[in-house]
Amino acid sequence: MAKGGFRGMPGGMNQAAMMKQAQKMQQEMLRMQEEMENKTYSATAGGGMVTATVTGKHELKDLAINPEAVDPDDVEMLQDMVIAAVNEAMRAADTDSANNMSRLTGGLNLGGLF
Image (cartoon, rainbow, N blue to C red; front, side):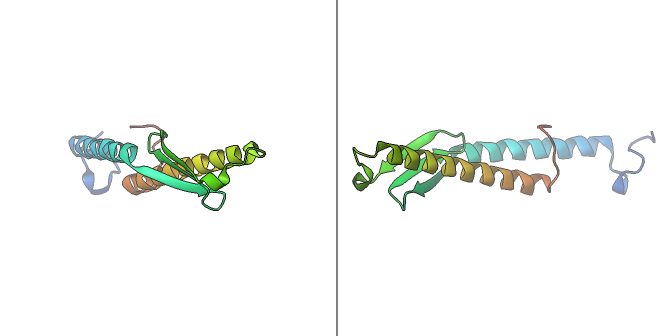
């Protein structure tokens, strides 16, 4: 290997510059992860009868059920609406997280590098 850099690296980027760039990216990823964990995502089901709100850490923070959705003869439908709303809110959190990570890494799949 040539002194001060890697063969074939664009612009002759040296090892120290690569490490600095990797550290900067890691710090940015940690900051973004913290932001995502504190963000909330809401979704509804049953035409707005059930609203679930989750955090980026997949914690259920709020569950609102319209009293009209409560039918003692059809508890299964209410359960299904709750599950659908929670799952959709979690999908929204996952999608937002993936989009932010892709934006940060420029679309590179780092496979758990950080």
